[in-house]
Length: 157
Image 1 (spheres, rainbow, N blue to C red):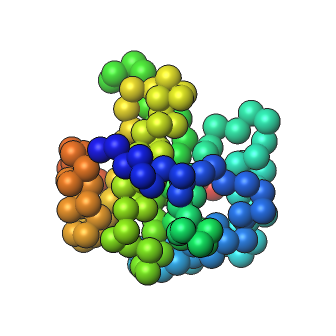
Image 2: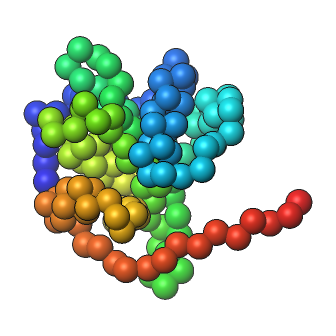
């Protein structure tokens, strides 16, 4: 899966990337037909990403001209049945015009590298069942899918 010729196009997010990251998140939300997210998302994400004890990482994919064209957001999670931590890739998104040029594979390779750097043995993620392009992409990388429904439960404060 190594995509070494593209790894220089993947880097960790910096504070100055927050406005572009917010744009990409809103594109991603629309692509996945999800409910709009809160305004001011960059201001909400910044403290989570750049705190001294942050456990959230964002890798960015850049085109050769330096345009930020995609992102992968990850956090460390604990797999109870396995009694170990893993890296959860919560989001992976590339702007439509950036797809098909190896940046997605470079992002996944960067995420795997981050997991190794953190001493974690596995990366896990989800994708909607209707996203056949993403499923084909992940299958080509050698990832294994597991059928499971994801639920969320609002909790009143």
